[in-house]
Each structure stands twice: as structure tokens, then as C-alpha cells.
Image (cartoon, rainbow, N blue to C red):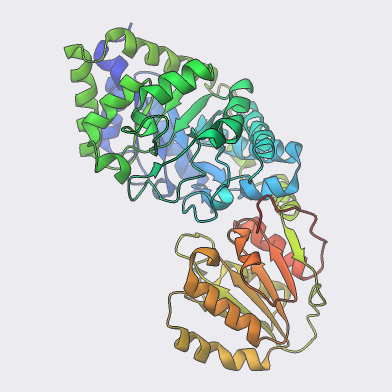
Length: 512
């Protein structure tokens, strides 16, 4: 039997900086002070490097460990360059194909398993209630709780068939919040009747499907607990999730270093309260100081009797069961990562997730017609919208098909007069303008600029590369395409649709 200090440590997960595990992480693993690690883009350079990092951690560890990552697909994917990118949840929802969703999750899971990762923080079960929600968007399958349930359970089957614990999130449902808990506390007021009728359905389905883990949100739901966020609320964790929904598997926090936690409680007290609420795995992503403070507070609470040893042992048993269930005894070879079959599947899934909202004369594009101009709005929140060399990723893909296209990447926060001055000449000469927006529905300046482009162009093709809501707010385009996310495969699928390689068959999963 492990010591109490080790059993407490097994309930703690730590993130860190760098492409190699730092000495203190290796020392904590060797002493049993943490139960595992989880990775971010800051830890990723290449498949071989990630595999070495994980192998070093496993070799140092006194006990079997969990290795976690956020690999949802789409906009939230820590594994990108050198790996098989996949479309996100909303694109899978737009395909309406559960088998496709399972196949994509299995493909992603196989690549993670090849690295030694045995715990994925996906799928997202949040329902797309609010178009102004800053943190969900195309990470959600859509607005229909039944479709969300079906696609999510398919992804759970895929991830877990590949040998990884899937994690359904963010319990009890983050879709009705309009505040990102990374930056501030969030509170949902009023009746929660919708929660029982809609938001809990995907979580019930996930539990029935045998999901490995449930992740909580830091939002306060006043009708359930007016004082504590879900992460720290016994009414929500022990009451709603455990007793009402009957889930007895592992429950984890979201990162405890989000401001919704740190500003109100601090690392130590928040970790102790999470355990008291019924949580099993406490996640601290960044600071060694916060991780040390949390562990010390948890151990002191156990030694003082504030947290009973019985309570510690219940969580320890669940964590041990999770590790045994997802031990990766038969991990696939590294060579499967980025293989042709995986890339082909991701490309097909992305095409199936594209929606042609409006088809006019501009699609398919006649590459030999008058000058073609690309006006593309960048977005700091989108990893695929930024420049890659001299061009954006979309521009690079389009230029391969239409070499003489004139490309303009526009910062939507720029002054309106400056933007109109910069692009007016190109618009006057253009026969067709391809306009790419990213979440303009939440950015009035971008909407104004985009509407100017549509009003000025002879013929415009609007590509909504972020959330699809832009399609209902920017008017006058000849043709309108929604990619339901801007991962590489989704952007390539949009270019293919513009060039007439296929006819998009996806259906929108939200109202625009």
C-alpha cells in the first residue's frame, strides 16, 4: 500500500514548460508526489521528441502514470506539425455521420497512443446555446443535444478503442456562459430547466458509453450552488454527477490556474475544496509554486483530518482503476503518425463537414476568369489563421490551385479607413473576391470590414472559417461556405469546394 503522501500525490496532475521534463517533475514522479503529467503545445516539437519526453517520465516514475493532453481536433489540438490534423467537433456534427466521428477519434487516438499518451481531454459535450460564448464555438458539435450525444459517444468509442481514456467536458455544461473562465469568474443565473432537458443529455450518454473521465467547469450555476463553482461544489460533483447521474469513474478539474479559481480561492484552498467536493484528479498546468502549494495543502488537509483518509482512498482507487484500464500495453509504432491513410481520413471528414449555405454562379470558381482576389481576416485565437512564411495557411492552399490569386491578410482591428484604402484598388480590379472571415459575429469591426468587401466586390465568395454565425450577419455574397472550423483539413476542404472538386453535403448544426 502506498503511503498517505503518495496516495495524495496520485491525485495531482502537473504541466510544465519545455521539450524535456524538468528535474523537479522527474523527482516528483520518482517519489510518487504526482500521478502524471499533461502536455501542451509548448512541450511538442516532433513525434520522436514527444515519445522521448513521455518515456523519460515513465522511466522515472515510481508508479504507473497518466499522460494527458487536449487533442479535441479542430481549433484545440496540441499535436499539429508532423501529426495528422483533424476537423473539430462542429464539422463532425455537420457530417451527421457517427461512424465517421468514431473513425476520426480512433485515428487521433492511435497517434496519441503511439507517443505514450493514455488520457485525452475530449470530447466536448457542451451545447452551442450562445453564439457569444467565447470559449466553445466550433469545439461544440452543435445546438441539438441528441446530435451532440450521438457524435460524442462515437468519439468516446473511438478514443477508448485506441487505448486512451476519453474525458467528456465541461460538466454540467458550459454552453450558456458568455465569460471565459480562463480570464474571469463566470456565473449562470436563472432557471436551469434547460440544463436537465438538454445539457445533461450528452453527459448521461457518455456515462452510459463507459467514458473514462468527466471534466468539470469552473462556472457558478446559481440554481445549483449560488456560492461555489462546479469544480468545488459537493452539490454538483457528489450530488448531481455521482448520485443523480450515477457516475463512479474518475472526475477531474479543468486547469486550476484559470483566473476563475486563482482570483477567488488560491491554489491550496481550491485543491482541498475540489477534493472535498468529490473530485479525483486535480490539474495544475503552469506554475511549480502553485503545484507545490496545492500538494502541500492537500497533504496537510489529509493529515489534519479535514479530508478523511477514506475520502482520499476513494479517489485513489478510481485513479488506479483508470490507469489499469488504459495502460497502453499494445501501443502502435510511431510510423503511423501522419501516415497517408490518416491524412486521407481527416481530409474526407473535413469535406463532409463543410456546408454550402448559399450556392451562386461563383462556385465552382473559373480560374481563368478576371483577376481573383483573396481578402482574409486573421485571428489571434486561431492557430491556423496566422502567417506561414509570406502567406496565411488558407492563402498558401489557394495559391497552389490558383497561382495568380492576389492575397491580402487583414488585421480586423486595424482602422477602417486604412483597410479600405489598402484593399480598394484590388477590389476594383477583381472579377471575384474570396472573403475569409473568422468569428466576425463577435467582432463588430471585422463585420464592418467584411460587409464593405461584399458591398464593393463584383462577385464575392464568403468563407466562414470560424464559427458559422458570420454567414447570417454578412450579406450580399454570391456564394457562402462554412467550414465549421479552420484546422488544416477544413481549410483545404474549403479550397476544394471553391474549385469545384466536390459538392459540400454538410448541414449546419446551429442556427445562423
